[in-house]
Length: 310
Length: 293
Image 1: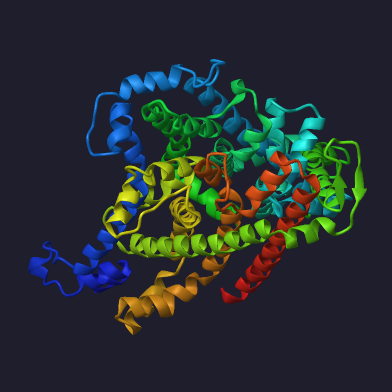
Image 2: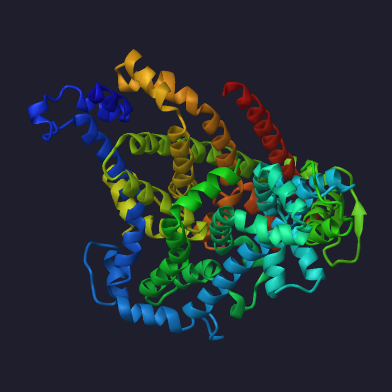
């Protein structure tokens, strides 16, 4: 009987595999061609995803002149560290400001600034909408959630003109704040606050907690997981911005890595030997931080993504 | 709203102020500007503007260049959506069935989500390099000599490959979470009724995944329209010539580079209407989804 219930609790594939095996040979699993096929498909998929990045790494280890002749191969050379040093410290332009390190710093400012700003502003707004009796609540709600409908790209030119009018070109404010003007995170936090039990607020009120104390001491700690999930999504989104930085930050000292890709590809043209080694390392630098964040905080990331996009 | 909300009159306004002012300044004002300028023709030297009614819109309709890019955007979105959904679904179904290494596969299949679109374009430039690009060589084996950035169709092909590569992970994540939320009892009942894996997939799993699929459909169309900008700009290296571009890229070219504010505003409004229609469509589907479950 115990055997039977055990079989039912197993996932279907495993249950099917477990059934015909005689007790004496239980430990030797028969080779199932179905499973082999599944793994083959998944390995092919994983390679499809991984191969381009491995190619970038391989190309950064061999001399540029050799790449110009033969392209990527399976050979691993010794140019990685010299190329890395060059990418980090040497500037791509005459101004001396587009070094890998400088662009890395700018990308960090954009990614972190965007994520933090967005989370703080949307938590405040969501708190006001959910926890207060407000006369204009419905109006505020619609004003805020209409922004979910239109992405920045469709109003890009007028947004640029307004940022220019306000004198915010080439400033961190002009780069980050217009990107925050959408309510994705506010919507997410509103959903979450709505699911927090009503009794919590009643209990806090009986204990004499005011709105500020309730927010800081109860609601924020309660939302920790949600904040982490949002932070990961928003950091990746901010770090990967391209069109807006290209338009707003024209001073080389403000270039981000993702924006620098444009300069990098232009460096591959022209008569001299294209600098594949350095370019590829800069491209790897541009993807590494968001990829590491997504891989290491996978559980929160998936939670944030699948719950916020709906 | 909570039943026992706080009654403080000023605090909520203070809390809402940052969000509302940013939205008014950088959302409603530009959106209004776009709508307004789409009915005006701006003097190229900035001396004034004249009301021209719908002329900016009819100009678009009559422009062969715009219509060509509209068609390109349409079939580009269709192909990217179709292939990224199909590949992701296959991978998610397999990742859901295997027992060994499930977590490793999941990580390996989702990390590309975090890659910035311009980097995807940069990688495509290398893969499709004229002289030694691995994919150029692979297709040359079949007698297809790809000339990306020179031939219209070949450039479009490279853009589609790069976009699909970049979009599979998002779809994979959603399909996998959709699959994992199918109750075990349903799966077991299906297993008893139907031993064939393929027919079980089409009669049980696929219909249960349909809501996720509809939702992803909209997400993918929006992605192909808007998030591919960086990838396209990198592949074209800032110099589109007569190569294919999407409608969003056209807005940027006309409004930012060409200084045709009226024309680019009309294009923005067309895109706004398109996105609004998609969103309304999505909401209606979400409504219907409630009846499913």
